[in-house]
Image (cartoon, rainbow, N blue to C red; front, side, top):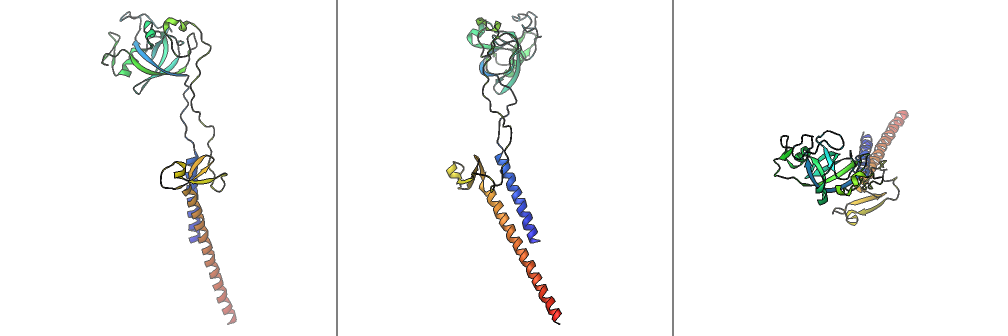
Length: 269
C-alpha cells in the first residue's frame, strides 16, 4: 500500500510539474486578426447632408449612399474606404461616402464625420431639426486617431490625407501606403519537454537573470525561463516513491523468509 501510494503521488506531482512547464512555455501574442493598412491622427469636424438644403446642406453624398451614421467625408481617400476613429477611448467605425471638408482641409481638418457619430464621440446629441450637435459644449472640431482597414476601389490617395485642393481625390493611386508592422501569431505552440530531455539546459539565479529577489533557481531552456522548483519537486517525488518501493519489497522479502523458516520447522517435526 505504501509503495502504491508513493508511486501515485510521484505520478501526480510529475504530471503537475509537466503542466506547469507547458503553461510557462506557451508564448503570449497579440490579437492580429484585424487588418491595419494605415494609422494616424487628424482634426475632425462633422456634417449631415441629406439633400434637405438645411444648414449648408450640399446634397446627397458623392458615393450615392444615403446619409447615415458612420458615413464620413474625406478630402483625398478613395470612396468606400473603411476604418474607425478613436476619441478619448471611444471607438467608432466609418466609411468614406463623400468628399470634404473643402477649405478646412487646408488647415489640417482632414476628416468630416457624420453628425450622429460626432455626437456619440463627444457626449452630445444630434438635433434632426437643425442638423447640428447639441449638448457637447459647442465642440465642432476634435482631435481623433484613425485606422484604415480597407481601401476603397475607386480613385483617391491611399495614404495619409492631403487637402481637397490638391486634387488627389480625383487621381487613381496604385501605390498604397505600406501597412504598419503588426506582431504575427506563431503558427505552432512549443510544448516543453521534461527537464531531463531538454537540450542545452542551464541553471542560474533570478538575481543573475534580472528577475525578482530571493535567489530562487531558474532553468533557461531554449530561451524560456522555467521555475527549477518544478523539476526539483519531480526528482524529489520520484526519489521518495523509489525509496518507498524498495522498502515495501524489503518487507515482502522478510515476510517470505520468515514463512520459509516456519515451514522448515514443521517439516523437521
